[in-house]
Image 1 (cartoon, rainbow, N blue to C red):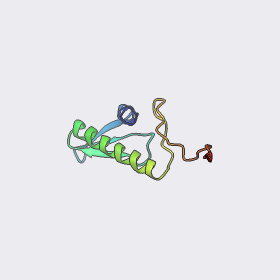
Image 2: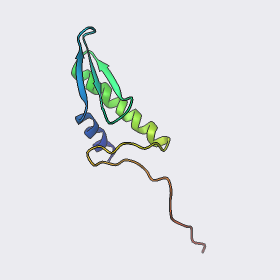
Image 3: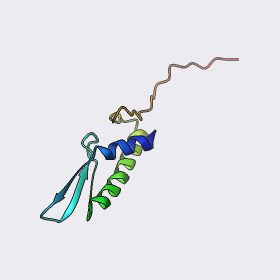
Image 4: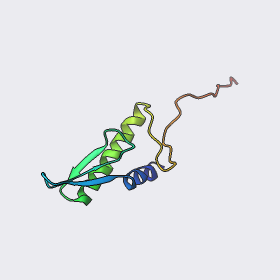
Length: 87
């Protein structure tokens, strides 16, 4: 499921050439603070995928809400309504 989420996020990415610097900039609008740069659009895409992976891993480790992208929800419920049953 994480791979599907990351792929969906990259599909939604926006890329632009920064003329004054001659580098590509990419971001995933649904993921705050997720952006990358590269000398080619492909290099930028690879860097952006790594940033998405790290962003999701950090968010999950901190129990932060991860936005749902393309119907893919990677959030882990932290509350359990289960009770242990004594033998």
